[in-house]
Length: 265
Ligand SMILES: [Zn+2]
Picture 1 (cartoon, rainbow, N blue to C red):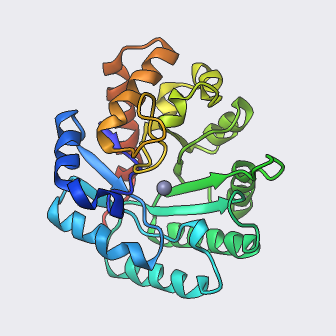
Picture 2 (spheres, rainbow, N blue to C red; picture 1 turned 90 degrees about the horizontal axis):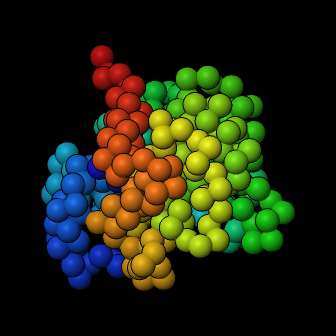
């Protein structure tokens, strides 16, 4: 299995990170993709890559919740890292209408700037899209619009922690993007149970978003990579497929996404 989104560098794993990773390996995890947040998370993320080469795979980018007054400096740091070495993806990037609306124009500007970086370095993107609390502002639709306006048809990526409706899922699929499915799929009123039966397995990848959004029966507690199996199990139930089919196809989907990247000449 490939875990496509986990913040395993988070301080919540400080006490037992080695054991946490051993539990993940024991469930058949082959790779853990690590989304970056801002300049403060880079060192911890790259230290894990060095400690577990081939297992812990870093992304590079600025998370929309970390777009503040100093966002241009954050973007510069991201750009410098991308120029210096290879990353699997640009991420996580996108729009967050949930926590703070005061930097929305900057969030959009940063998202577009990072789409440009994706094009420049031929990298897929990992999208964070969270709607406003009352649901009036739809971040999934806004990200789709910005991607369409950007107009690079080879752009690929994942709508991480997808929690939209069926129409939004179909728009994501028609953009040739994947839906990142995590613990929300196990929640009683998560809504994804109504979407997944109608979306082909070839459009899905697995994620936990650890340490957040733990699946049932761990809901509300710290999430960890080993719980990815619970997500795969839930998708198998919803789509009436075998667990192995879900694991096999979602792994292939994830590998295809990052193997599109051509090695630099
Ligand atoms: Zn994340």
